Every structure is written in structure tokens, then in C-alpha cells.
Length: 102
Length: 102
Image (cartoon, rainbow over all chains, first blue to last red; front, side, top):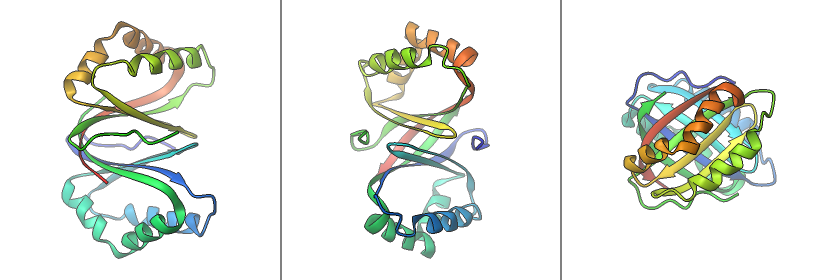
């Protein structure tokens, strides 16, 4: 995996921290689908992901408008509902504006 | 590991993405020392960390001033120099202002 090839700041980062539930419940299928979908979104800049005890996925976006548009995507909304119910014991989402990169 | 118990935004997130080098070179010792040190810094709010192919550590801070002060810490500077030389094949640091959390 490579680092996300983000442009000169400012841009946005959505930091998704999660603890997975014990069962798969179709997680991997949906996760692949969502990943394919998000990469087609206008304003998507890249993604970085790691997991052991907890998982952290950081998704980079051109601007807040792109994040809001993605949040309205129906498949994404479905994944969020299922995520809450089946895939994650708990999670936290933080939306931040990247001001510096080096 | 628990999620960082961050306050109501705004606050800051330093996103550190890295690929480790193959040898330890004292990484674990220094990593423990730095972790103990950072937790004592004024303005430190918490940390989340995960690693498999790449590593992502997100460190949360009250404000930019706290981040700048930490960057001037001598032990931290030493770790940065060694990090570049010995511990990481590559890394990227992004400093961002968290605007929303849920």
C-alpha cells in the first residue's frame, strides 16, 4: 500500500476509527464495494488504512462539499446503517481540514 | 485500545502515516519513551494507532501552539532524526484541524 498522493493543502481528511465486531456479516464484500464506489466520487483524493487492535481509515477529500455529497450517496448510507448494526462494535468519525503536510 | 476521548471540536489532529524499515534499530524502546513523553505535553488530548502494511498514528492536540511546542522538544527532535535514518522507509505527516466529530 502506498500513501495517498494528496495535493498541497488545504484539503480535507475524514478520520474513521473503529473496532470491528467479531463476525464478518458480509463486511468484506461491502467494504470492497464501498471502496470501489468512493474512488469514483468527485473530490476524492485518496485513502490510507491500517488495522490491528483498532482500525484507522483516513479518507482525503478536495473540500467539505465533496464529503457532504458522498455522505448522501445511497449505497454509502446503507453501509453506514449496516456498519452500526453489524460490522462495528464502535466507531468514531472526525472531519478535519488539513493545513500542513510534510 | 480505546478511542481517544477528544473534546468537542475544534481541536487538532496530527496524522502520521508510515512504512517501517525492516530492522528494529531500537525502535520499540524509543517508541515507548516518546509515547510516555507526548502524554505529558500540555495540550495533548489523546492518540490512536494501528499498523499492518502501513501504520497510521493520529495524535490529537488542543491547538496548533501545543503541536509547535511538542515539535521543539529535544527528545522528540532526536526521535525524528533517527526515524528518518533508521526506523521508517518513508512517512508522511499531515496537520489538520478537526471541525466535526460524531
